[in-house]
Length: 233
Length: 83
Image (cartoon, rainbow over all chains, first blue to last red; front, side, top):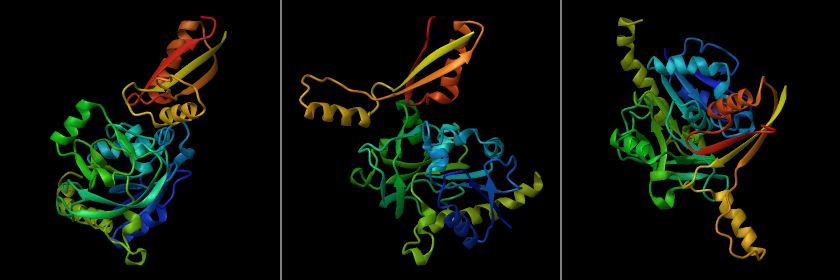
């Protein structure tokens, strides 16, 4: 069975929605506290949104030094799947597991509303159930979501197909992110960060299930990967 | 010896600085003329023991690289008091 670790840092939110979305996708999902030094044998790490450590200094800057992050880094470097949602994405950038940075929204306002996005890259553990170019509506809720990277990094991300999720148009871009980037992946494709909250749109009760695919994709990705994992335990 | 060290962290030139723009608009509204640019950053003060000013400066520059500034989006400078 797919084992999922949902990381808990002080000041985060939506970890319960994240845990339940993983469970609905068939996973055995458990919380892992930020002071833990192991991931409890998890196959996949989910880093929820929120405001770890009050966003002091910069969003994600302090959480990056939590004890559990050494285990996350080792997991990611071994090819393990990691999804950072919102604050999780910010932490992954601060930890340099993903390139670039997330800065204050261009209009200086916290924005909480659904936005139209396009799934651009489906060859990740979290987007295999979507079609490339598929339009989805996902909730956002952030004040620091403006993705920024230098020109060379942007060019590389585009050339290597590492933009996973993009705001559907300039008009849909809620924060001034460069190239309308809403989510990206690392070079190996196993670490993904996104600003929108798919766990808030993963249950019919919530009125939108466009985000459920991130979790069902993860379950399928794991099922297909398992035989190889057995050969190389 | 104890040193006071001042760190100034600024958004990198060329990157959109919406806080600076908002402050600039406010100052213009108050009637201050001829403002070219306003940029908003962060100041950090540290008090620390070190053998000399050079060691204090080097240690704080390392802190800037590792945590006090984001090397992707920010520039910093370090001033050791009395150095």
